[in-house]
Structures are given as C-alpha cells and as structure tokens.
Image 1 (spheres, one colour):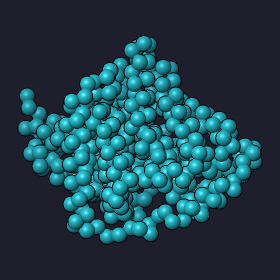
Image 2 (tube, rainbow, N blue to C red):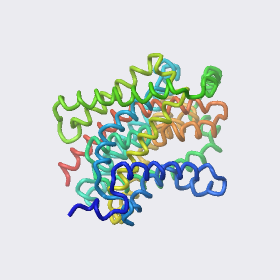
Image 3 (cartoon, rainbow, N blue to C red):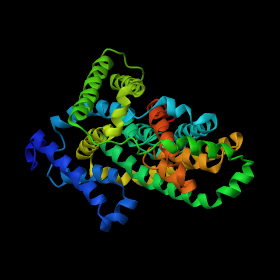
Image 4 (cartoon, rainbow, N blue to C red):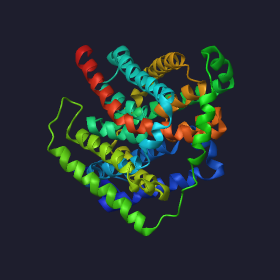
Length: 399
C-alpha cells in the first residue's frame, strides 16, 4: 500500500514547506528567553530531527516521499560546499604545530575509541550498529554536517540515525560539561604538564583580526552566487561520483561524491569565493543541511529509540578513550589545557561549541576555537569514513 496517501500532507512541495516551517519555528523559539533552558539541554538539531519523526507518527507527513531522495542527492553536497567556504587554509596554518598536533590526538582518540567501543559492545547492539556509530564518528570529528554526510554515504538507516543523535546530544553535551568544569583547574594542569603558555599569548594577538569585522549584509547577487556554487558544483560532484567504483561497503558512489565535494569546497576556500562566508554562505548551507536532517527524521521509526541505552553506554566508553588519548597527547606535546579542551570540543562539537569552550578558558581566544572547529569540519569526512571502514571490518570479524 502507498503510505503517502494516508498522510495529511502528501504533496512533496507541501511536505517541504511544512518541514521548512518547523525549522523556522524551532530557531524562532530558540531566540525567545522563556525557552532558553529548553534549548540549553536540547539543542535545535535534536528538535529538527524528532519533530518530523513525531509528525510522521501522527500522520501529518508521509514516511516516504520523492522529496526525501531529492534533498539527499542534491542539497547535501551543496550544503557541504557552502559550509567549507570558510575553511581558509592559510589561516588554519597559523594555528601552529602544537595546536594542530593536539587536535589530531583528539581525532585519533575518536577513531580508536569508536572502534574499541563497537568491539566491546557490538554483541548487544543491532547488526548494523557500525553504520550508526560510523555516522556518529563524523559528528564527533567536526559536527553534524559530517554526521549527515558519513551516515548518508554508508547507508545508515533513518531510525538508527535518530539513536545516534540522542547519543550525540546526551554524551557529547555531557562531556562538554566536564570540559567546562576542568577550566577551574587549568593552571594546575598546565603546571603539571610543564607548559609554557607564551605562544598562546602570541596566538591571541594574531587572532584579534578574526571575527565579525568583515561581516556584511547579504545582497541578491551574492545569494544567487551562493546557490549556484552550492547546487552547481554539488551536481558535478554527484555526476562524477556515479562514474567511480565502489570500494567495500563504505566508499560508495555517494561517498565519492562527498569526498569530491570536500575537495571542491577546500579549493574554493582559497579563492575570492571564500568571502561569501562574510555574507552568510554558511547560513544558506545550514538551511540545506537542516532540511535534509528533517527529511531523515520524517522517515524514521519511533520504536527504534528503545535501543538507545546500550548505545549510550558505548558512547560513554568511546568518550573516555578519546579523553585518555587526548590528555596523553597533550602531555607529550606540553600543550596548555586551553588547547586540550578546545581540541576536544573542536572534534566533538565542531564550529558551534569549540568557540564557547575556547572563550571559557581564554575569553579573547574564541576565534581560535572557531578555526580549530573548522579543522575538525575539514578532516571529519575523511577520518569519519576511515572510522566507518574500521568499524565495518570489526563487525564482519566479530559479529
């Protein structure tokens, strides 16, 4: 039976308008002071996923629609290109080897932690748990855009995706609380590490120029250029991916598309097109991304959420391994607690929360957190695919 005929809204355009309306209402509510505590503990991304899920459960939106596939194939590549426009490689190089080294230790901790957690708990998880945890590795190396990209590339089912969003929110934000708590002890920890923090002061002076100074109002010319760059290059990457062979269960044709898109985005960030970020290119990219996330939620099965507790346990172990490797790397590099904390959140939270943690430790260095979050966004696709491949091998060997 065609389930779309039983829904209150079945026309693809009507479904798109409804989902975009939900996104707009969610972000309007986030800006209201009376809802501040709600969004402090349940960020917009979880509402953007679960409200469409509830809408389908209640019969408002259909569990299947031509819109969903169109958004996945066409808007995800466009979103990633627009989000990567701000990845100015020249600025990232100024972070220095100690900052980048600490960041990479945190990334390695995510890769190793995810594989170990799956090996430990895989017997109590669904057979395709590696696909969900592979998608989560994308979020924990750069943010939700990478999570959607990796999950879509490896074929993570929609209800499993929802469980990963729960783990991402509960465990990820729980760890953020721990990192904030440790800020009270940063001087003791730096002394224990034998840290010379003078280079942090130099970084502070260098980053004063980074921020809102170059922001400008969006013009129609720039908006039309953003849409063309995102959709145009995304379409070319999609066509190129169709001609490349699958490599195992992870590097599919769509995974090739994501890899090509990331390269295009990085190359464009080295050109004058990167200035489009000052006019809001990432906002346009986020509209595409959140519409995709909403369509994933609309297809998901609410009953699958009952599997979340064991995934939460695996997520906690995962974070503990990440923290252990990161602190070991920080001590080895004699990195200050500021860099250790910011590196961790740049991996797990990405560009959204890394500046927050940076400012908690050093108020004037929020831009450093932003740039380190961009690093996570850039490398997250590649390390996320690597983690997913390692998890696929573990699942095939042990389960």
